[in-house]
Length: 211
Length: 126
Image (cartoon, rainbow over all chains, first blue to last red; front, side, top):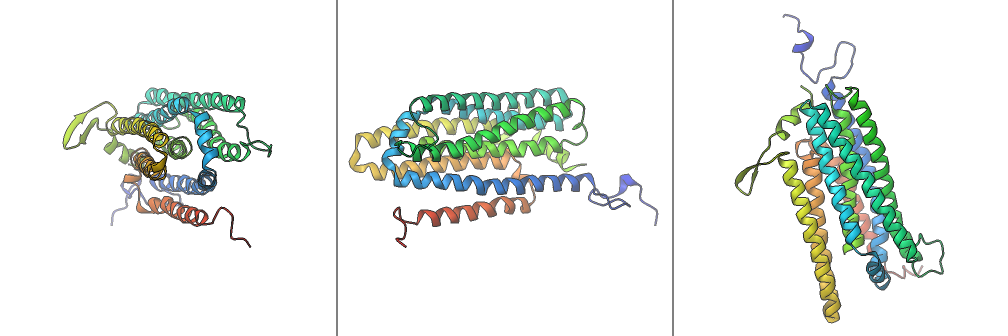
């Protein structure tokens, strides 16, 4: 039987030294990110259930809070985050098509979307603090319970957006050096994280601001 | 060919089949999904505001309207989340193992939430 050259071997095979193929490596990297996201689901679920219990038991407080919150700014922020998810997937698509400048442009827009979202969240928090809706250590305040249940999930989500912006900038730095020209798995992994952050916001926006 | 580039082929077309018609749009399915997400968000916000007004105007049916509002809005939110996971996170082209990885914690979280919600506000008085 004639010997196979490296190019003729199946893509999933290990080489003579037991090293993984690129496809196997990519699949493992993606599985790792999915497992991490699975753990994040549990953490966010705890915060969400805390809010739901408050929503059921303290209907009047939540109704008053809804009057204060308003939906204008947060709806605009939601559109920004949805758009950034679209920019993200377009960035991956550009890189998969070998368009490095296109990828850098789309990922740059993704980071910009995240920064705009965080600015919107800062404005919202400032307005709420001005209205007396604070974190909730002051147990005498009528907003103490609501403040804690509101700020915990939204701030934790905001922290994820912040980390995502840093990650996007790092993806751009590496991408500019050609790191993803032959294997865009690094962009795909960042995309999974960023879209997950978007999915969490979709649920928080509905549960906290609308229902 | 890597898996990433394999996926690239199926996602690079600008032509999308939508409601039995083929449409061509820059960005293909991703643009269509973004349009759907935007439209659903507008419907969601308008429905919430409309039902909030209706609850305020007729307090006698507030409980029923609040239940309708919760089911409707959460239904839309689940559709939006599913669109992002299915198309943007490419779950539709991943191995079934990935779906299990993401559905299992969702199931556990869902059961835990139902258990916690079943506890009365005053606790069990132990």
